[in-house]
Image 1: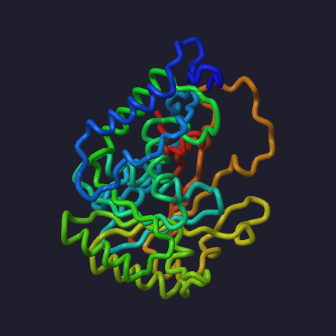
Image 2 (image 1 turned 120 degrees about the vertical axis):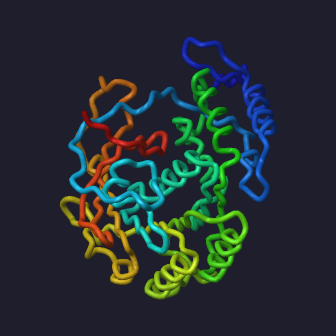
Length: 338
């Protein structure tokens, strides 16, 4: 951003006044018809116009097809390989996504939620974010949907194509039935009551809890035993007849010292016993120390191939799938093959 003119510039393109950008976003948001009781995207603060980097959609990365296929009778995530291997997220079952800090487990469940509500305005997702505020969560979802870098802190670029993607994403997600709760001290009873009320009202298709490690934490920072928490969540899934998607964050000492991979045995026994499916995330590029060449084409910058090990699933064998991850956008995409 030019500090003297206050314009956001985009390379050779003409600059657009930052104030105009904010007003266009405000009007775009106000022109949509919000559904009652849903998170309002218009509550996103634009005191400082968020900068964006020029980016292009992920290029397809070729790998082999998955080995295992199951009947797709669960809630489909839109991630093709996962849906083929597991058959989707099934009612009454718990799926736990485990990873090291900053491995992308929270981003993955955000992307699953985003894909589900964007694909169908009838799907209802209750998302409990225990360590991220409502505003930041929706910013990340919007950034992933629009393929934009929302986190650039200063100055930045907003091109016409990026502006178009942002406004289109806002319109697509505006009436989506994504309910966000960001109370990090929420109790298990409150989780159940909130979900049961939603189920009785307009319905409920998926419950997401990001960071089950701290669910039920009190003001002193103490948390209930994980076995008690997982048992209650399993009861919630079965009573409400909905799939429950969790993230669990491991400590670095629980991973292999050389490969930095988690194994199923790295998880607490409670997470293994009560989880119908366990996904272990591994980002090889996160631990590589080689230098990145300067001549990488722009569309390929920031893109990683993330390995997702389906270490356990009820009614199916273990398997491994891969997803394309763009860390700048906070977005997962399918990996394609010929």
